[in-house]
Image 1 (tube, rainbow, N blue to C red):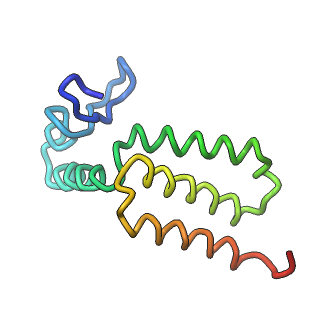
Image 2: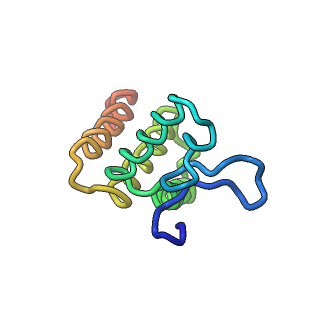
Image 3: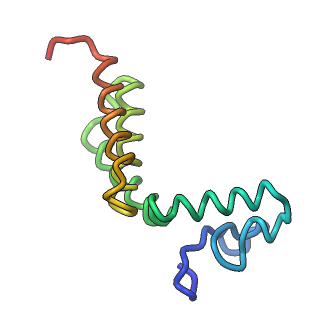
Length: 122
């Protein structure tokens, strides 16, 4: 978190790449082109519904670690990927706007894709 209270997506200390995030260290300012300006706008728009990338990533990685500890390695690739995407969707709900219906629809969609891939017969 930047001193001004904004979430900044910045490289590791000493890295030779520009900061990318809201504020004076935007990708657009570093690159000075239309694509970078559009990317900055997209990042800002997503932050309002998805929360800060830093917070969302921490939550998602914690959930993925829980899934791994619970034995997710025994699942097939479709179920493992569904769990990864479910972790991201839950993290967006927790870190961002929990009233965003699209998050909940996406979550249900990944559950459906995992279930559809399995043969009936629990």
